[in-house]
Image (cartoon, rainbow, N blue to C red; front, side):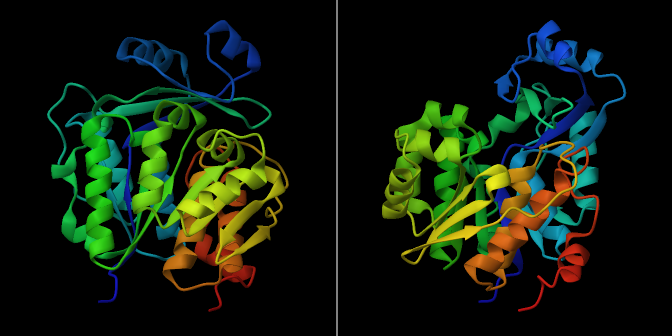
Amino acid sequence: MRAQYDLVCVGNAIIDILHSAPDSFLSEHGIAKAAMTLIDEARADHLTSLFDGAVLAAGGSAANTATGVASFGGRAGYIGKVADDDLGREFTRAFRAAGVTFNTPARAAPPGTARCLIAVTADGQRSMSTYLGASTLLEPGDIDDALIRAGAITFLEGYLFDRPEAKEAFVHAAEIARGAGRQVALTLSDTFCVDRHRASFRHLVAGHIDILFANELEILSLYETHNLDAALDAARAACPVVVVTRSDKGSLIGAEGATIEVAAAPVSRVVDTTGAGDLYAAGFLYGRARGRTWAACGALGSLAAAEVISHMGPRPETSLKALAESRGLMAA
C-alpha cells in the first residue's frame, strides 16, 4: 500500500530557546562550548532568566527533521511527549502550523515540557543545556501504530534512547514499520548518547535499522575506532545504508557496496549550526521516500543543512521546495 506520509518521526519534543552570546557568557555561567549538557529544572529556570531576547522554536532533533520534510512539500508525522502546560501548548501550535501531523496526548505536568537552552556564539557553534522533562516519558503505548504504518520511513532520534520504556518504544515502532514493509532510520544524535548506550545502539542498528545517520565523531565512537574507513565498514556490515555527515567536508553515503561522496552546499556565512544534521536528514529522507538516487538524496540534505545554518534557529526560513527547485534538485 502506498505510504500516506513520507516520514514519521519519533523523538524528544523540546522547546528550543536560542540566545546569541559571547564566549565569555559560556565561561561565566559554566556552559560547555559546542556540547549538549543535561540539566535539572532549577538550572533550566536559572538559564532561562539569563536568555534575554531569546528566539523560541518548537524544537527537538527529529521534530526539526519533520518540519524540514514539510518544507520540501512532503508529508510528515511526529510522535513525542509534551506536558499539558504553556510550553507544551506552544510546541503543539507551532508544530501543527508547520504542517506536521502531531497527535500524541499531552501528559499532565509535572514534569514540564522539555526545553533546550542554546547559546550561539559568533563562530556559529551551539552550546546546549537541555532539560528533558516530559519528553523522556514516551513509552510503547504512545506509539501510534497506524501512523507508523502510514509512513514510508520511520525516523528514530537517538537523544530519546535512554529510559527502558523509550527503548521499548523504539523497538515497537521499528517492528510495526518493518511489518508494514516500511523502512526505519536512526540518528545517533550525539557522542554523549553513543557513549551511554553503545551496546544497545549496536544491537538496534544490527536488528532494526535500514538507514543510519551519524556525524564523524559519533560513528567513530559507536565502533570504538579512530579510523573512519573502519567505522564505515563496521556500520555497513550491520546496516544497509550508512550516512556520515562531516560539516564543511560534506557527507559520505555507504550504500549498495559503494561509498558516495557528497559536497557540502555553499553558504555565505555560518550563523548558527543548530539543526544542521536534522535538516540534512530531512532532505535525504524526503529524497529517499520519493525514490531519488543516493547522490540526489545527499544533495537535498546538503541544501537543507546550508539553509538552516545561514540564520538563527533550527527550522528553515525559506521554502526548501522552492530553493531545491531553483537549483534543479526536485526533478525526478
